[in-house]
Amino acid sequence: MRFVIVLLAALATLSQGAAAKVPGPLVNADWLAANLGKVIILDVRENTATFTREGHVPGSIVLAWRSLRARRVENGVTLDHMLPDAATFTALMQKAGVDADSTIVIASRGLSPEDIFMATRLFWQLRYYGHDDLAVLDGGVTGWIAAGRKLSKSRIARKRVGTWRNKGERRHLLANTEDIVRAVKTRSHVLTDARPMDNYLGLRHPPGQTSGPGHIPGAKYADSTLFLRPVRPPYFRSRSELAQLISGLSLKQDRPLITYCNTGDWASGAWFVLHELLGIKDVALYDGSWHAWTKDKSRPRARYKLE
Image (cartoon, rainbow, N blue to C red; front, side):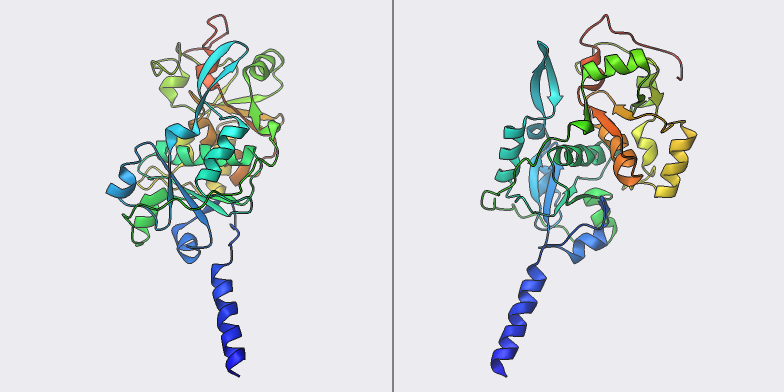
């Protein structure tokens, strides 16, 4: 009898430590709280000092936003804020203690749409390199607090080096400048501009990130912040609301879609909504975005009009 009791206790312990599978690409604080210890939580933020100063979801591993973007050369042109190559990204994930079979939840500070789009950008990068068992924490750390959950301010020790690996690049999820040149000429894709209206219309553009105002000719306006509730924390809208928004923005699905923004962050928010939450299969992200497009001043630009 004593052996049976010990065996049952051991099995219970194993069960509690068993990995969880995400129920979808978006999880809330309650689901994460119920599965702490069963998932890898990657906390991505620009200022890593806030990880311990402000607090984080217990057990999180902090990732510096800067480390997740890379300088790359395409066709002789130097581009910043790009997807790291497979070897670099693999090393980052392994250093964070991520294994090949890890269930990953990506958290951000959740104070602004920009924070949320850092999370969706990392999600896209992981998906691009073949990882499927992952989700974004809706509302980020701010959503965790809003749900009445406690924060930790302890510095998380690095785990052992993980076994994460590139499972194969999903090139259909990525568009480069040559793809956009063809799309503009042939109208083969629906280009989706995920930036704010003043960027789209060419009234303003971020100096240093881009080399001029406007948008890619033919691109549809679809500011990614529209997909979030205008409150703090910025939760994603319901799927029914998102579907209505997509229809209202005239994002027709009769052709493949490509999202872009200034440097590929806000574009990942639109991509996440279209591809992951609404299940539209043929959606790619223009990694270089307006930053890459405006490197060549001869490329066409549109201003002061809604396409």
